[in-house]
Length: 148
Image 1: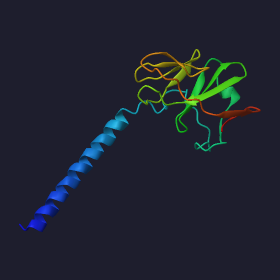
Image 2 (image 1 turned 90 degrees about the vertical axis):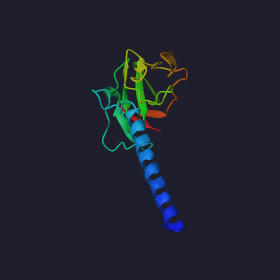
Image 3 (image 1 turned 180 degrees about the vertical axis):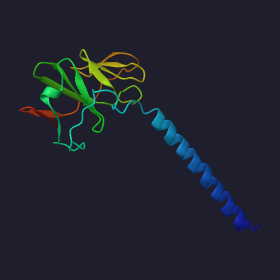
Image 4 (image 1 turned 30 degrees about the vertical axis):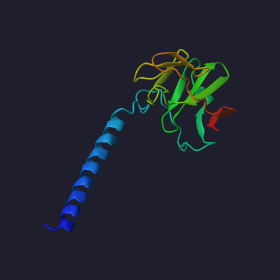
């Protein structure tokens, strides 16, 4: 085998090893990605929302008082801490990047390591997370909630 053929074979082997490693890493990241919010009725997505700013996320009646809804595609959680008050936060947990799952009794919960966050402020209230969920801008006009 010539030196050029040996180099080509070595490069081909490296390419295969790198491709297999990248596929394995992608599979591991997907497995560790957490909930996509599709379990249960807490995830409600409106047709045409697509994540674009200004798109209607939900009707105000869709967000229960003391609860909230996770919009997986937009990576946002909208909460209703009290009557007439709506808040929005990133749906990505600040501990290890899992998607938060639900909002019950004014508590946002991450299913990966059970971090909890205050639904009114996004501040951590328990678990390994120490940083608050970043706020997201929404606007409420009439009975529609839109992502700003």
